[in-house]
Length: 131
Image 1: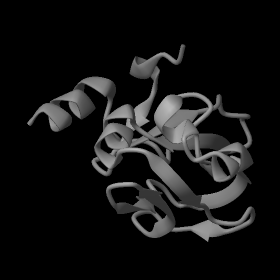
Image 2: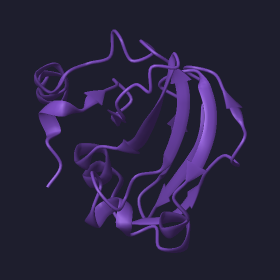
Image 3: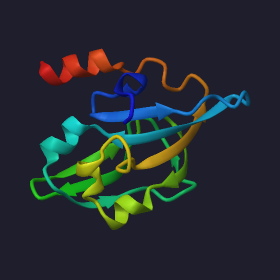
């Protein structure tokens, strides 16, 4: 099970897991949507993700998640370069609902060290969703 307290969060209901820094000034982040977002969306039926190599800008739309209830946009929580997408989620979008913090991750991005500074911790995210 993923330690939810070790993750970072955004107000757009995304979670971010940071791999340890390599010491080269960059690190890899794994990004997905939270269980709260997955529940609100309903059954996810389609996921569109950016191509590997895509440069993303913090706050910009980088993908789309479609459910039986609505279509939602995936926002980049940080600026960086997409280094991997979760093909399993593209092939089976229901993974977003079934395993939002594990097999349902969406993209991996390389970023400069410190790129996640200022994102929400678990307590702040829970307070946001309860407000």
